Length: 229
Image (cartoon, rainbow, N blue to C red; front, side, top):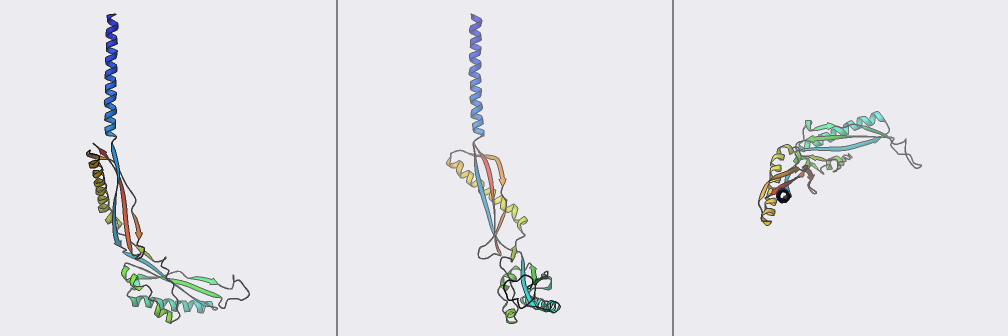
C-alpha cells in the first residue's frame, strides 16, 4: 500500500514537472516566434549616361545601281548634318541597307511608280546624352533638300550604366528605412526590437520619366523580418 502511494506521488510529480516544462517551452517558442516583417524603400533620380539614336531614311528609284549611289549621297548628307550638330565621327555608324521590290507584291491595278526602295540608317551611339536631347526635331535643313529622316522616339534608347556604383548606398538606405518602420511598430507594441530574423533584397528597377525619358527613376525594396523582444 505504502509503495503504491509513493509510486502515485512520483507519477503526479512527473506529470507536474512535465506540464511545467511544456508550458515553459511553449512560452519560449512563442517569444522566439514574435516577429515583424517590414519593407524599406530607396529611390534615386539619375540622368542617362549613354544614348543610342537611330535615324532611318530611304530613297525610291527604278535603276538599282543609280539608286544605291543616290542613297550613299543621302547618307553623307545626313552624316554631315549630325556632325554640324556637334557629334563626332566616332559617334556615328552606318546601319544595314534593305531593298524592297515594290513591283513584286502590289495590290490594285496601278503599279507603283518606283520599282525599288532602298532604306538604311545612321546610328548615333554616344555618351553626349544632352546633345542627343537637344538635337531632336532639328531635321528642317534635311527636309528642305527632300530628305525625310525618321527618328521614332520609341527607338531612341537612353541608357543608365551606373547602377553598380549606386547599389551599395541604396541597399543600405532601404535597410535603414525598413528598420525605422520596424522600430515604430515595436514602440507602438510596447516591446523592444530584436535582431534580424530574415532579410531579402528585391530587384532594382530602372524606369524612364514619362516626360523626360533621359531621366531615370531607380528603385529597390528590401524586406526584413525582425524579432520582437
